[in-house]
Image (cartoon, rainbow, N blue to C red; front, side, top):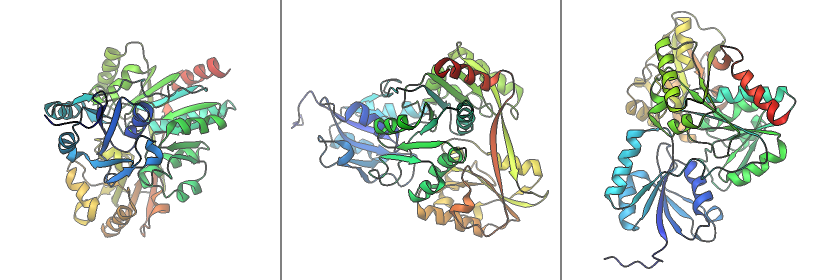
Amino acid sequence: MQKRDYPLTMKRVVIMGAAGRDFHNFDVCFRDNPAYKVVAFTAAQIPFIEKRTYPPELSGESYPGGIPIYPEEELPGIIKRESVDEVVFSYSDVSHDYVMRRASLVTALGADFTLLGSEKTMLKSSLPVISVCAVRTGCGKSGVTRFIARLVKGRGRKVAAIRHPMPYGDLLKERVQRFSRIEDVINAGCTIEEMEEYEPLINSGVTVFSGVIYREILREAEKEAEVIVWDGGNNDLPFIKPDLEVVVTDPLRPGHEIGYYPGEANLRRAHIAVINKANSAKNENIDAVMKNIREVNPGASIIKTASNVTVEGEIKAGARALVIEDGPTLTHGGMEYGAGMVAARMSRAMPVDVRPHAVGSIKDTLEKYPRLKNLLPALGYSKEQMKELEETIMRTPCDIVIIATPVDLRRVIEIAKKTVRVSYEIEDMEEPGLKGAIEDFLRRVIG
């Protein structure tokens, strides 16, 4: 038997993550807990986030050298080499099958496989908290967050959005982040993926807080706000304990609301289940989603909303269109198209095939996701990848570029072609609808 040179009562742990939930789980449950020793993080889903170190300034006195972050592919070797007792799964937007295959791998190697309870890592705020989460990436939760933030502001109350983490750069610099102006985003050197989440809220007059250490982030947000809106990422659970939980579903992907982790957990907790995109989904798909909601959460209020697409500019019928969509929605979100393709179809434009002209990691992504046809995911997790995106656009023959990303790509990269911008906003389809439900909650908690 291999000799251990550490206390028998101390569990040796690996946290599987994707630069966000994993760091939060560590900070809340493991950082100062003498019963555990976290020997490594693993990273998946997001490119360029592995092969770095979670710094000692964040990991605490028990980890003077910090904690290494490895690619998830190395997990079996880490379990064996480090005599790992427990593996904690800490990322989101994956199928139930995906989770259990990882569980099978880990348990076959002799370690425990753990999913932390929904409230074990939730921080308590002194302010009213509304969470906006989803059952999958790309359901439209960002639009719902903006919708709710406008209602809070309309009552003359200060609102702050706390965004699910995206710490893809220098973790120390991103410990606590505050964005109230576009210049703040620029100065922070944010990736396209970060800009896509922060800028629409900033443009709505909402200050956004994000980063790595959410205990500190929450304290900073509480100094400026009267109501906090948790703006969820992917289909993850909230980091802040909500007083009202709004969960967004997508009838363009019926069945996904009960097929993905932790999206189903969100749905089971929801006070309000929003069926978004009900203006463009088939009635039988809306009915299927409604049936699943009622089966797993019969107490939830079900509200249908529209996701209305707006085109800022003209798209001529028959024009060869390069359609650029939100990257994560198309990749691990599993969508085959977004608002840009909707706008192209409405205008009778002709989307062009990007694949022959794609370069570098953009080409690799399109090969990895063959279901993505005649569109371009706006990936920009690094400066190099942004340059590859720019070159791919330049190489692709077209008459017009349809930019359907939450951030205006024309500000981020050079696009020397005619462009139009496509956006979407959430609207109620029934009365009293989401507006009525939120206003009723606000009357009860803030008067």
